[in-house]
Image 1 (cartoon, helix red, strand yellow):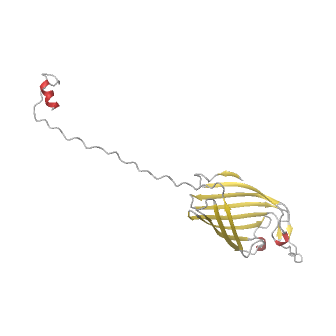
Image 2: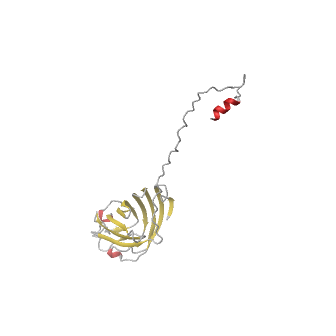
Image 3: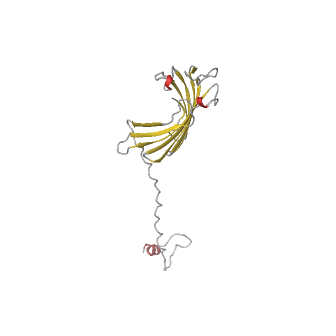
Length: 220
């Protein structure tokens, strides 16, 4: 993955490009394989609102060889076809409490040369689920979800159930934010009571210098 914008810090928007390769490990005639190598690139744009919620949109281009599934051609009518595709996904996450994530997503694919031409070549599927983290075992989480196909496109399931267990090594629970300290106002001592002098104060004639007799009065 090549990260262009990183939203793991104070930046709420993230953007990344991720190339990918598919290997032919399943049976293509049962819609669980590709029948050959394929690959492409995925652009991922997401927005994170603090730690409470996140929305992600991804758009991919998948390049692979053209293929018509056996048994789907009737006369001169071209059957169910597979070729280069646009892959589109929209997902979201909400964290109502610290240990629980609620997730949902919608995925679809379109033929590049004939987008939205036939429903059978335009599968749309939605999934919802949750991820529960175990507070007593930091790093351990249980995942459970399910969904169904919205259209009857190939690969779109009648029902799909997902379950899993994950463990994050070196998981560190985020420390709570430090408390906000309100500075205390300094205590100002009350002013001393005024001093009232009832006796006369004498100065040297024509000067501001106190006479010795008056110095004694002020000392008292």
